[in-house]
Length: 168
Image (cartoon, rainbow, N blue to C red):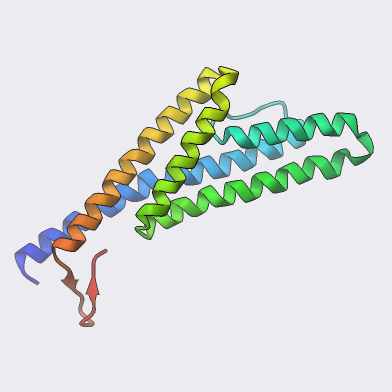
């Protein structure tokens, strides 16, 4: 392996580790959104500021409907958890797709999280808005890292021991 190939390989390894840290914001957002929903349904009395505003809204609607229709309270509450699980899964998927270098889908996840930020804005939940801003900062750094990886990949591929080309 030439010296330039070694340098590229080292840079890719470093950038990949960085992308993994930055894309993990999607995992945290999705996982804690689901946890928040479960905590709400079980009346745990605590909620994390981390997560999706839309799932908090869904949980609130579910809670209101449960109060209005006590005979259906369990179905409504766990239905809200199911919807949250689907939305959380989508955000977890965005994190995984980012690690697969799917730049367009990673950007789609960021756009959806920006829209989610707009949902909580009218409620003036400053702590949650602060977390959204921090997460968006991390996600945008991840997008920059993903672009850097793609650029490095186009500059040259690195042959592996089996004769195939590998970038990461």
